[in-house]
Image 1: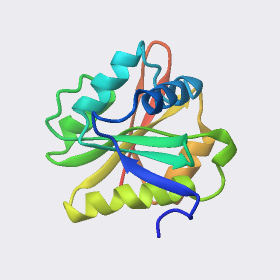
Image 2: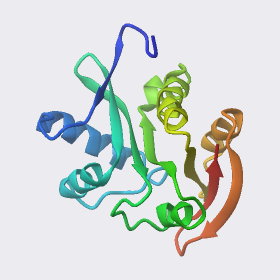
Image 3: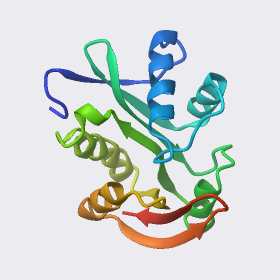
Image 4: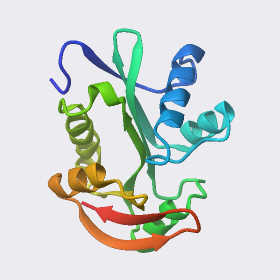
Length: 167
């Protein structure tokens, strides 16, 4: 089993309860700048609509995490996504992943990545992501390196910097 008996995983669909989407939006906003801020609830819906696959993690009725992933040729304007589009014909891009702070260091993120990695392996494609280097997100950089990702580039934005990783 991917997650313990208290943690459930569910794929997003547009019949998903607004209460759940509110929790996901709030969880995203509480985890900036590690993940990009969303200007509105509708931006979350737009992001999920464009994504290839995304999963939400629950502990009872509480959303404790999520992951949003894109494939190549998505109508997504992110500069980070475009970086991978420029170097890979096919890939699975992890746009954002959040685990609620009280649930970190319990293997949930690792198991979530293993779950998504199976999708990449099944499709014989690379798994890609970026991690903030300014402000530096040391736990995420260490996690990705431990998980077998290799750094393949960097980009400096006006207000932050990232490192690009691929596996």
